[in-house]
Amino acid sequence: MACTDNAMRDLFLLVLFCIVHGEKEESKGIDAKASRPGGSFDITKLGASGNGKTDNTKAVQEACASACGGTGKQTILIPKGDFLVGQLNFTCPCKGDVTIQVDGNLLATMDLSQYKEHGNWIEILRVDNLVITGKGNLDGQGPAVWSKNSCTKKYDCKILPNSLVMYFVNNGEVSGVTLLNSKFF
Image 1 (cartoon, one colour):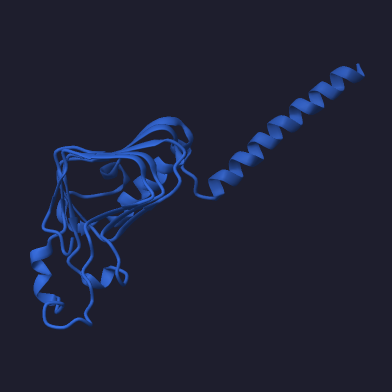
Image 2: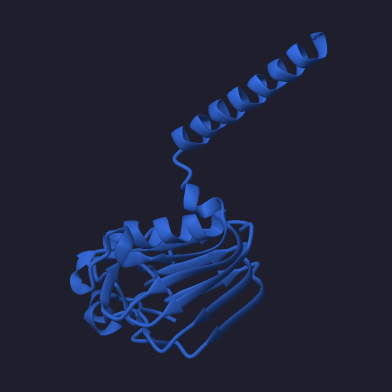
């Protein structure tokens, strides 16, 4: 009888621990979908609008964070459309492999105040097993801001953002995507 009581008590404590631990994870804002092996994160399902005017930075950053938190193969989907975004920072280490499938167009904001000093438009840091692929574009919209830069006239000027910069990326691949109209490089 004592053995059965101990087993029931242990089972109860285990269930209680799982419930409490799950509530703590939810309160931290961890997406339950991101903890599954393999997943796809379509930015339009996270609130992005492909009209070329709406700021979609938050939806893209949320997709990146969710993909990076998941195990196995994770995919961030940029579907067809024109998605205006500000400065993006994709810093990890990630738990799994990440593919950014660019089928639409990511358009860099033309508001230079949204970029940190010497900032980059899309910065990827410490991500292993990264693939950026698709037939879409990463459009820096450079011609709209080139005239706002005085670097050709004086050395002490604000440097415009680079379009795509990757630091400490191991086993990375970029294919099929077109980078155009960079603000700087």
